[in-house]
Length: 85
Image (tube, rainbow, N blue to C red):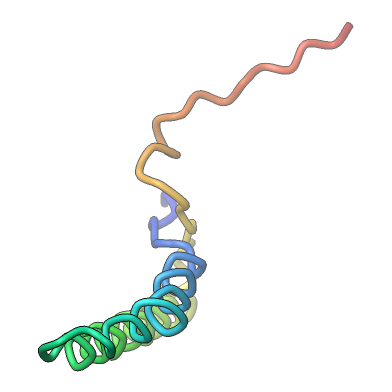
């Protein structure tokens, strides 16, 4: 069976770091409920990451392979040939 593609964990980590370290600080200074919206977004991303980890554990228990993806283009990228000189 082909590996099941999943987003690399770094995608969640990068988004959370940006939101927690930069976005929320500036949003809290802006008028309106922007800080609350950022906090909701952070919570949603944390839930999504937890759900992905649960899926990974389920796949591992079923002995199904997982392949972490860094982009959508990975599967389409040709593998460069290595010439020996």
